[in-house]
Length: 266
Image (cartoon, rainbow, N blue to C red; front, side, top):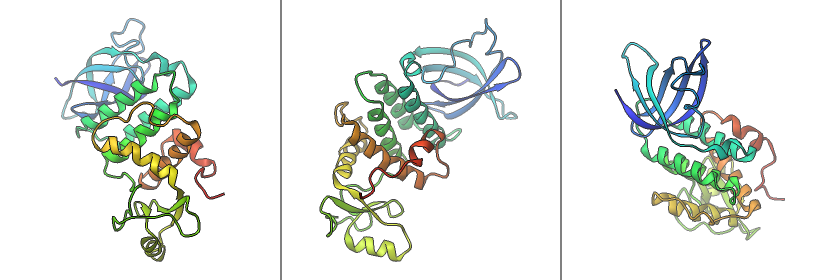
């Protein structure tokens, strides 16, 4: 029977007393588990299968069933702080939703697992704004899936992408073309029917500073970006880029994306 570290991504009631758990495991990818009797007061799973906590799970997989049967569950790390603070709770749920969209059953993704676990740990730091951990996770998710935007050089030709001729504080940018663009490639993208706008250069620089570490498979320093306005602007870039490239939008991101683009030219 497989045993692995895991994080619960989603939970669904199953009958009156049981629970279906969708979890991201480190070595087995996303697993779908049936926890029989989980809602019973004296169940061995009571209080074990909470969101955000680090778990060690053991399950039995039957080739004839879609759901594996959970046989054992232990909590190895509690993250109660994420359930006691609404902004941190919302940021943590957004991470879980994104991890759920980006994982597949039977496809191990230890890098995604470690990124999620580390960012949940960082999110528990009450001295840091929640967006700091969320932005790192979103950019790390894009990097992990080969979707990270080009923020320093032109996404199309890999040459220098200087500021626009009309506003030296902004550069051409297109999610459909992969990120920052030089003037020539911006025109080609428009001619091809792709939407091309501009992005503040300081936001691009902030994002690139984080991606430098993420490309090297390490988390950026916790104090890399702490200003709330800069974090919100960078989150806006990351979430709109994700929204373009993902088949569906995480529920936790819909309200954020419904507001006007924070990086639009005034």
